[in-house]
Image (tube, rainbow, N blue to C red):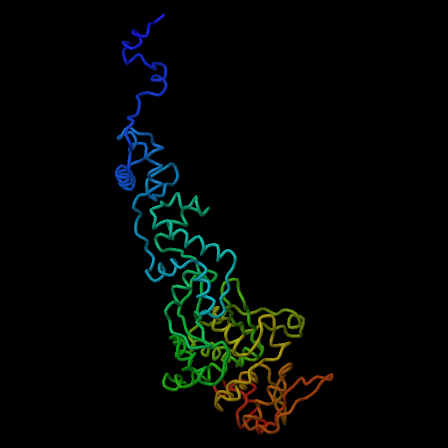
Length: 453
């Protein structure tokens, strides 16, 4: 048995021997204050792990973490220090928008862009992108951001380099700061990658109130080089063509009312459309008609070219002489969708074969503008008789008659079949005076019109 005096004289190394062997060297019990915390925070932010900081000062790592939290230093996976991240290769204008949050960006896009739609996936991408920029600013690395947002690491790397930015962020960056008049919005002339790439932004009205609205849109477009190459075939030089661009717009719009197929509409990201023209090869002059329509499209800045002929199908396949058809197709463009929706006044679920157009604005346009529109409708759906020209115009018969009369064709009237006004009819002499078929291509209808007149 050890006496009290022996215990007092016992070596310090003997006290708590079993505890010392379990926990190692005792920590120094010195009070740690704010100066220590600041020193630890500085070391941590410079890249020193918490464990090394604690070992250097012979304190517990938990104490260091406590002070870091108390000083507002963020600690992420594995209590790693925040390291300086490479600078973002993102335009400063977009970074300013991102700081306002994804809801502000959505509001901006909806207010300023025509024909855009925000998919659930697109909104989530935008939200993740905004969070990424915020975390990057706090020094969080790519791996940690990817885990936090449940986004693949490669996507974060591309965002950091300014590559493959979410489409809503790209749109916001493109339209931010552009001036707009009341009732006008912005749209890109062309899109790619499903709407993820947008180019050549122009201003368009949400509704047409007059001819100058049309001119304002056309003036923002730039004719393609092939416009003039094709126009030469019709005796139109560059000097003649430039003042006619509004008329070519009218002709293209009239063709969209006729047989030209309109493909597309309200898409998951952007409303866009392309047109598909098919004309029988039984009439060789149809080749020039398709080429002329391509020139009209080219004059507004988007491509349209002949593609592979359509082979006989349906009734043409079982006819006595099956004949293929010439075929032309344009690129997809939101401007074509705008022409369909705002120019013709059609809803996305409507078709020109079943629903009437809503375009009273055209009656306030110049004579030649209305003339080219009527010519396109007649070139598409007209028939020449010995004494009259007839245009299959259902369900727009009354509209076409009003338009013909506005051009001085007082004989214009409707022909009813099966109780419905199916055709717009005008006397041959009045039709030839206009002329009701375009005079540039000298198509078979135009030649027959001149023969009878």
